Image (cartoon, protein in one colour):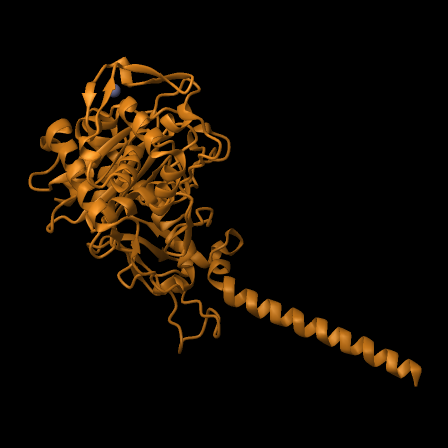
Length: 449
Ligand SMILES: [Zn+2]
């Protein structure tokens, strides 16, 4: 009897382990089925995927004879690589990975081959414009970086480009060893962060507007080109002395000394808090992808470090997708519309489209809009952009050290009901904010005009 009792206990334990294991498997399939469909070891399934088209009906990817075929135009293939994904599935953020279940007709209940519940290879129409993407890619002129632009009213991503890139139809043999392809699998608008430089002045300005709502525009600081703040110098670009600066002049001249003083009067804690309200150190999701965070940490920072952080140096990092959403929020009374890659929003990837998210007060948004419009009207020049777009923007050159040329940024939006576009562009080792990033933004907007 004793032995029988012992055996039944063993059987019960085995049964429990078995049920637990099946449960784990089912849960795992349910949670990760769509990723499983488009893993590198399941790449053969890509040859069963449906068509992918851009918003104008241009064919971006299709299946032929069990293989995956991309656009006939090699520039289109390179410019849209990170949005579409590669055949081997190494680009985990592309729609062929993230929406692999939809494209193959994979269904959790019926598997891959059921004809009643799932049709093999359903197609997808993306919100992106092939023309805007190729214009942005060409304007990068062989440099690396990220460009992303969306319609801040309906959420449509119109342009998303990452470089370095490669041709998915002819994957280079030396992709793993050639430094020119370092980071080629990375979708930088979503999965990278960069030293922001002066575009961070937008956040410092917002913190001042909320600290001194009635008097921020009257505050002035003197700039002599260089000043010892907190033990070492804060300098303006090329040591240029800007003289007495208020917020409008300091934004247009991109005066570091003004913003360094301003941030120290605001206080590191208040600046940190405002940056976090505006999305720094916060998570953003896009089309089933967890976007890389923008980060800021002023814990224990001295006056000099707070001064450099205020102008986007020190240890500050910014993600392009976040910067674009932030610009969408400035354009739209402080709340941004959730970006999307398909007209149905995020539903094909199994996620409900998230609601709009508030990043600042309507009043702060309105004031920032005036400030950023002034930059273009009075400093950069409306002539740079297509007529009637009323571009509001800020450039930045994030110094990265190691003898490298700076990250050149432009972030902004069009204050226009006809062209409700918000954008963020960063080009690595560029010449200057306007010269490099501004030219890229201009090319993107021309393609959409
Ligand atoms: Zn200055």
